[in-house]
Length: 466
Image (tube, rainbow, N blue to C red; front, side, top):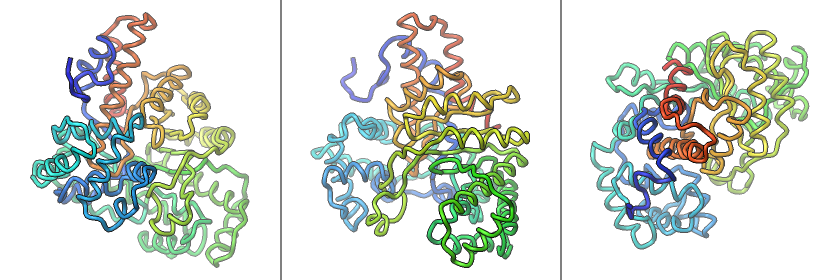
């Protein structure tokens, strides 16, 4: 038996799991249909100066762990050197046992750098030097990092104001891995947010439309959807606390928008009505363009006001929210379905208490027109770990068809995050392998192996028409 922590049968607890993973899942290409990678870095095939710049900078998962251990912010987002930051991360790693960071860290060291030693305070300097020496090689450019893990497709996430310059460069390049984009217009929806009017001005400039009314706003958004579509975009994404679906009239929405543009203060009711109107308009438009739409629901963002002022969003101050989800989501999807304007939809749930709610919700709108038309998305953010993935897989299996599932994604800003697909695949194969061992599933490797292959790759390939 291997003495390495990361070995061929890591997380695979019996021969059936091993066979499923090695024969049916491992070699499948990766379709990463939602992430926050830099398209500029891919277009320019950036070579990172050292391992910290590609692995720790921007990773709020690691930052939260370091802060919890009592590491000073200087060594996290501050002005410490890259080597000093890495050494502090190395010191932190042993304390992350039973957090997914411990598994991810050692999978990433193994898969990208062929480093199988445990990262800790004693090994950190040596591992930093070895990994950084390799990062300086063209073999470790962004494109080659994607090649190393057998990536077939990556989909980054862009704001409607983005000119998609780097996606255009990639579309005409000889890079064999397809790089798409997802349309993320939340800033146009969240009317009560600070800086909303400045954002609307920027949106109008990108669409070459003076946005003076709600109708102008809709025209500008439609203009950008059309622009994204012409540049190969077929996916949208929304990161909302919950779906908005309030009753409103067109006159009310026109008045609310005018009030906000004149810097008036909106009531909570006014904001919710406006957000409901814009969201419904967008989803009707996505259907018209034949896009896949994604809803990431349940995050309670920017909880620490002091640190948000200092560092801004997406720096590690978010948590799981306990928003009511079922009623508004049902009404929203039903309203679209009633008009025959419900496109393919993936719903990601952040609160594990809502897994079964979401798993049953998707069945209400799978109408037989498309295999797996409405999906329960993979465990994400705080739930993309062994327990969270297993609970998501079990909820989907018990209340839907796991065989139709489109599988895993990274939702990451790091070019070293792709072993999360391997992590998911191992967990999936072990779950099924254990049930074969117990006699809860038949020892039909041909059929169950096909199901594993489909979840690992084929379902996503077909769903997104890649």
